[in-house]
Image (tube, rainbow, N blue to C red):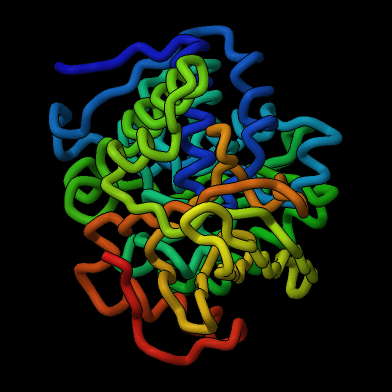
Length: 361
């Protein structure tokens, strides 16, 4: 059975590579790195191609305000959520064999790996989206009818909330319950849900995405050390394309409905001099415009990094920064069905776009 052993150096590469594929969201890499520092054991990463199709994995993730995570720390609540879910499913005769990320991001990839390290449980080299997403409804799990029930939430003290949805596919109800619980827990909680088998992971989700983040993180680190162009290295690994380079001229942010909505305006430099690039975001980057025309949008990834080679979330960008924008095609399960775009339309409409899917690939 093929497997990778991830020590702290490899986990740091995973953190930075995940930050890039988070497409502006997915949690702070600095919070992810704090979890890496706390890991007591190495993490075993298993290729889903080598695992029994009936074996199961569960997602553990954080939910709440980024400020609360940074100020109060995060970690024990994720272990409590995992333990509660494992015990609950065992009562029903289901054994959880592995952990896996629900999405890719600087914190959200690392959270289940942290639990895996503390509990000595292997991790499946896969995730639920191949990118970060702002809502439970904007994901491959609901697209492919994977139930968000039961849903377990925990706080740092070990208090547990268990939710069983009347409709296991009602992601709106699941989102409301999870965010309400996070508020009641002081704007910070962990949740566990989406118990899936390996066959489902291979058919509907994104295999080998964690090892991909490690390769990206390693390439960026080595490019910085050798003075090479990190953007080009990332493009080679991801099959993406450079969309723009320039200086951030303006960042406009507003908070509504519990989310950060933003607009980032970039003035072109070098080959892009005289041009302007605009990115609209809802936590993650949703759509980008050039000369008022859409050039890339979700589910494709709009990734940002400094020209020195450090990936950025929307919480990290500042006016005056010199950055590069990389477009990365969404993993195949997103483009296999019209729902891979349609699930985002309610967000795009709020951002001023009511058209069809436009791809740069």
